[in-house]
Image (cartoon, rainbow, N blue to C red):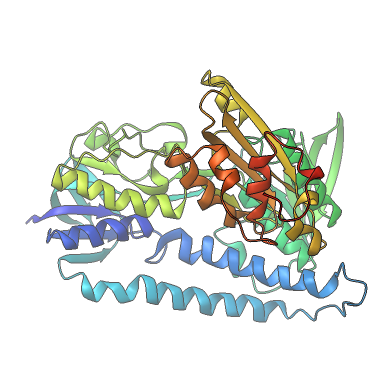
Length: 468
């Protein structure tokens, strides 16, 4: 016997919950089927929350061991690694309960079912042998680590970002395979906690999608902290001997050998679509199994939507939640809201952080937009000078015909805090001249945005403090 619902949501993470909350508001009979991570999905369980907790813990160790001030002598830090991980687990449990589990009682129109869903056709799924039918179906199954093709990998106890943060015994050494944001955040936080870290990647630089100025700046600071970074390296095989992971790689035209207590795979993500039976529903997937969607989050099958990390759009928890709300509105209210990520702020939580919004120079050039870029080094920003921490820069890109801001790229401690001002400036067509004339409090990092905007027409090195 079929059970029928207005909406079936396959998944139980941030995107799925946002969809369920919207569906409940619309009084839609809704079935949420969760067959992956615990309710809450990647972000709260194994992603954003635990990683940012550990990044802050590692940062506190860094401050305890290093001081730029003559009169402050750091005494170091005693690290109880197991206690850090246990506190992380407690935080994850609290956040999962507060932001996900406790919400279920208010979702009176939502039925939650644990199990793996499989499509029978475009309106029907099975879970544990039971059949369920939905007028609309939303796929929100998320993603998992994409494993590289390396000889012997399946025979060693490798870790991923989904499993690493639960290891209570501190790794003596790590080989991190991958130079994207996940790999770099892991590398720096574990290095600061006292683990010897080597990052290995096939690309010629870290964060390869960003400009050389950004990647060079970040690489300098990571290597200054003692992280070894091997770019353009191909790992040929891995094996384990006496609890030690060994890796053979080709690097600079030679064969090298690495050893570490642990190896972490951080080579990107693949969509959790392998066992959904999408072919029975006729749903088209693309590279790494991601579901192809249009600007309304519809798949090629009109009544099926895909949201969050499972689709081909940017993979962030805040975009996932936005897509959950938007997809349900489009499906049941005829809203026809288009997803537009042209002004999407993003952050890499290294230290210094890397952040951006809008276009960079390459993207502006590809679109044929006349542009000009300016770079404000933090060595010219009073807040950074006073803090004795001038790592990084603020870069603005403007349209030379309209003076509108096209984009920004930031490398700076807590540089992410600048992204929303810049996002709003781009979204609402604020000119660079207007940005430069706006009052910014002195000795804030945000003043660096003003100085960067002013530097299109002035030499800020020749200005006094606070000069407008």
